[in-house]
Every structure is written in C-alpha cells, then in structure tokens.
Length: 508
Image (cartoon, rainbow, N blue to C red; front, top):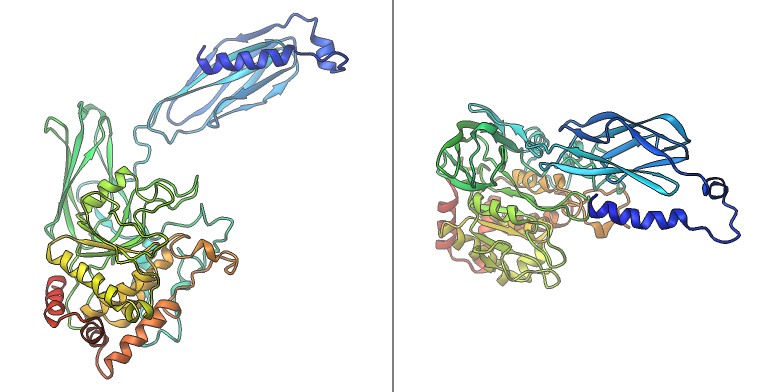
C-alpha cells in the first residue's frame, strides 16, 4: 500500500466507525453489529495500453458499497450499490495524452472496510507529436486561416476609411466563428500560429544521451536544437514559405536517426515560441501574434528579406512566468533572433531581455499612433535606429509591445512603408492581428464595453486610421514610402544615409 492509500485508510476508517450518541442513522444502526465481508473476485489490478479501454471488476459484499477513482482519467460505473454475491463494475480508462507511464487506484469502501484496486497505463511516446513529416513533403508554412485571408483579400491604397474585409474570414474575434466571452479561452482556432510537423524515428534506433536536430534552408539559415533523451520525435515549426530545407537527427554518438528534405509553401512567415498556458487551462501562452516582415513585395518589384525583422506580442512580463517557457527561449535562439525591442510603457516595460544573450532596447513608450510618431519622435527614432543597427550587425530583431497591436502596429507601418510596400498591402499585414487570441487581438480589459469579444483594431480604426493619413499627408503627390521617408528625415531626424542603407540591407 502506498502512502496515499495509507493516509486514506487512516482518515476514512475513523469516520466510518464514529457514531454520535443518540444518532439515528439507519445504515449505522443496521450494520454496526454485522461482520463486514468484502471479496474481490478475480483480478485485483488492471493495466491499460496507450489507447485506454474498459475492463470489468467483480466482487462480493454483504453491505452497501461505493467505488471511487483517485484520478480523473478513470471512471467507474456504477459507483455505488447494494450487497450482492456477484457485483460487476465497469472501469473505463481514457486514451493517454502523456508521454510518461501513470498509476492510480480505485477505492472500494463498505462499512469499516476498504479495498484498493490498482490501475496503471502505459505512457504514449508520441504524445504531443504533430502531423508526421516525411522526406520530400511539400508543407504549408503558415496557418491556413491567414493564408486564406492573404490570398483572397486585396485592398486598394487609400481606402482604409471605407471598408474592411477581415471579418469575412474565420479565425478571429468578430468573424463567422461566433466566439464569445464564454468560449474564448478554449475554442479559438490558433490562427496566429504557424503549422507544426514532427520528424520521427523508431524505438530501435534510440541510444542513451541527448539527441540533436540540425536544420538548414536554401536561404542560408541553419539551426541546432537539443532533443531530450528517449524521445521518438521532434516537432518543427516557424517555417519560411516557398523555401527548401534539409534536416537530420543524430544520437549522442553521432549516429543518424532521421534525415531528409522538404519544401514549403504559403504567404507568410509566422512564428510561435513555446510557452505554458496563460491562466490555468486557458490557451494563450507562448510568443503569440508574431510574424516576420520577410516576403512582402514592394512597388518597385523588390522583396523584403526573411529573418531580418519580426513583430509580435510580449515575450515576458512582470506578473507571471509566461509567455515563454525554457523550451520557448531555446526556440527564439533556434530561429536566429539576436535582438529584442520592447515598446511597452512604464506599467509593464521590462529592462532585461526575455532571453539571455539578446541585445535589448526599451525606450518606454506609453501610446501608439500619431502620438508615438510626433510627441515621442525622439523615442521613435531610437526604435528605428535600434532596428537598423541590429539588422546591420546581422542580429535579427523582434520588436513588440504587450499585445503586438498598437505601438507595434505603428512601428510596423513605418518600417513596411519605408521599404516600399504598397499601403493597401500594409493594411493586410496590420489586420493579421485579428487572428491572434484574446489578450492580443482583443483586450480583456475591454470586456465591459465589448460584449461579444470583437476585434476593434481593423485598418478603419485607431492606429491605422491615425498613422496612415499622417504619412499620406507628408507624401503630398508622392508615394506612401516617400511620406514615411519625409517623416524620418524632417521629424525624427534620421539621416538619408541610414535610410538608404536600411533599404539595401532589407531588400532583394
């Protein structure tokens, strides 16, 4: 008997034998002088495989009885009954989603007597594995939800005051999914997360020691990631679209466990870094609402390079250990990110990087929109120069505020505009935050004034409709890029040499 069972016995038996003078409990009066008989017929312990299943427990007793499982992954039916010679109870065990073996028990109780039935289940070594990747596959990189929006929607320049199409698409708050404050924590479809796949190998190939994943792509990126001893798979994500990759998994001895190649498709380099759940069982941990500016086309036919500048939501915060966990921190480095720009204000800014070793800048900005550009022009210049210097030093930079929405959106419009992305396309990139969870796309603090949780930060509202006309006004009869350039030169005080060099570093 384990210690849990012993303590249960010590607690339960005194309760079962205690009788208050004058009490009239009929069960106690009728059974207190009866010698309890309680016998299990046949199996007294049961073992389940990964898939779970059902078994029958049989016993006899001369008294009323109860059966109570000690874990939520076990059910018993019935859970109580009358005396009998051939009593059957069905034990149901659910399929496991855990990698480790697990053990529990069922407590059978009658007056003055307790018996235990041990339950065990094999762990599932593939628990948590994503869809299997096979050498030669062509994989979707970004979420299918964002892909549908990006490929089907086209906004003309200077139409941001007239309409938005984002609510026609599933995956966000205010769209056709009908997400509410009752189900926002469990039912939203993770549209801000890229697709995930698993590289697998057989049990017979395992050796002791830590394994290693090595990946590289056609664009010149490479990365190495440790894999825990005993694992039979490693999940990969954050793939650049329209790229080609090679991979290998090696044991501690150097023996190759898996290797191959694959290519990708899609319209967006989304990224996600692992984290624990935000609050209890509510989804939302990790580096959310995050994406690379790479892949966007410019008016003069150039393309923004991948893995140079990323925008997203917070990677750390003061009030709890999420978003990132230890594995998420490793994934940031695996992606190749080398610098972090924190745009948060006094109430929540962090002056240390979320991941040790990243270059870090935190100018303390209280508000996005035109206020950030004009009233905080010195800090906006500081932000731009940090991005420029990080790229120049070959340290890909991740910039964020708390949600990756307003202050992040302001700087994002500036950078994409300066690089020559068409304003109508910048609007699409800006609205991708719609696909992020509540707490990023929709502020929880807006709950009272936003009864349905609805995404309010479309291109027609707040930051976009505040910043974009300002740049258009500066452009006069010129392009949107010329308006942003004029702002940097005449308001923020950035030199023409820096602007030209930044474009050269970012475009191909």
